[in-house]
Image (cartoon, rainbow, N blue to C red; front, side, top):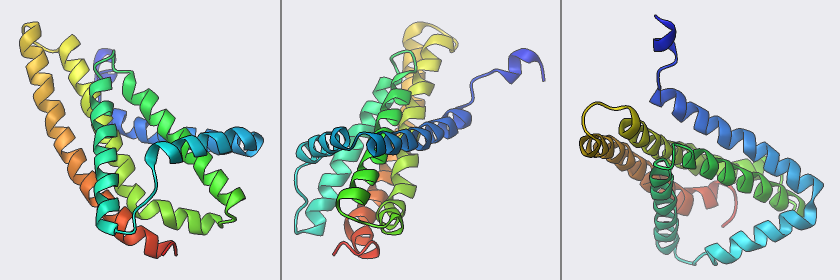
Length: 192
């Protein structure tokens, strides 16, 4: 393999690195919240206000979660068109927020780390990779536009087709994640 080929773009590597960014920055968010409790509470309250309350109906929660996550995934994909950088920033931001919220729930609500992980892992194993997949779709789209073959319009279309196929897979994973988060996670984590 030549030097040039070893540095070629790899969608799989981008996907794994996006997952790594999420995980790594979530630890930074946790550390931030540990060192800055008042700032962490402010961040958490802001997110809770933006999200609004959960419903008594699991189905309504499912729709709310699914709609929110598909919106985030769409922005992950579209943000890839901005020099391929947007997905990294959004994934990092989401990781940071998760880290902050984990620490706040642990310190304010007194939940054990085991209970918190039971509240995150069942749906997170679908949701986080789905978001990384949407981000990878956007990066692929951008890379096709700037480095693909043919005229600009054709490169844009070809990239869009590739991206939308991955985005569709992301949406399917998010459907599963929302179902798990609304119906299974609350029971597994003892939240209902």
